[in-house]
Length: 255
Image (cartoon, rainbow, N blue to C red):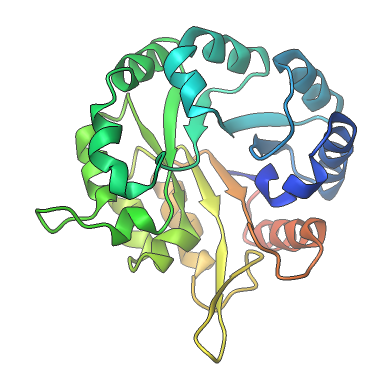
């Protein structure tokens, strides 16, 4: 399993092409060899391909425009192939999990998923806490329905460790439940303050999640990429947080 940097962590440093380019260099200088492209300025597929190559990086997954995935599927696939990315993802359910029924009934969704699969790629879904907190009539949360509703060829899951726990579920049973459907995941740590506030932390800096057990569970489940994401660095430099996460995971034997 390869560790990577989720660029959403560095979104404030990717607001224009020059800064985006410099950020990729800094990420590579930390030691990362792969990134998830999400939360950045606009880019062309050719520009991203060249910038990745220049810095010895790959892109394993994106969070991409859901509208374009539905309405420009072939173009989206070709763009991803240009910069060598097989996993085409969305960062959450449009409109939130209250829109679950509309999401699964979207007439263009399954045809888009099937085209992506036929091209040798995979549509990926990233969870937040709502997928676990929103319970449907049968008493099961949305996340369980998503994995039933779509086949493994149609939908993979970018399981986010922090949001699983925030939503009230234990991470390792979810890894085991979704094994084989987790080619890409998000490593995000949680720190619980004395006042009971849950905060995002660099990986290894939390006090709730046990990554010494989580890492081998993902490896057993067949995960290829674990991207470090920290939406909120709580006043710390995001590059420093990514460096601390990288060093910690290296100490566990990941590369």
